[in-house]
Length: 122
Image (cartoon, rainbow, N blue to C red; front, side, top):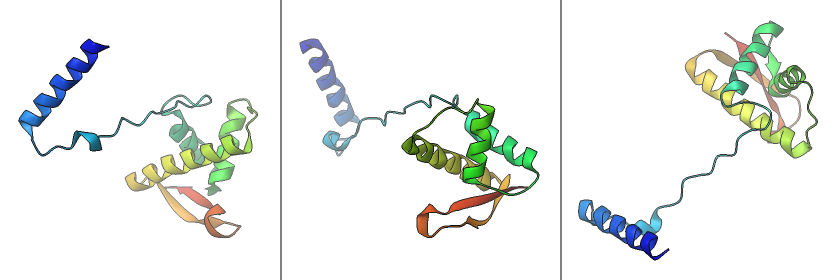
């Protein structure tokens, strides 16, 4: 442990040599990314596009996720897990929106932030 502390102090000294104004106390640890138990990395956005392609019509984020879960064998999810996956699918589709692959066709029912975005494949 003492050797590790010594090594960290050496790293701090090198950083201060390169830039004395750096506040090392303000450096935060790297965000820990938890992997999804249902979808492999990068699989969810592709499956979302496949769901839109196969539907040949606009779908809400909720409907897209339901189609994706059916293709995965219909795993049982808690309400919290479902909401987390909805946000993940929505974020993935927003990335596709910025690339020009999908467009937003409005929102589906409800009021406020709980309304699902309706997506259309371009």
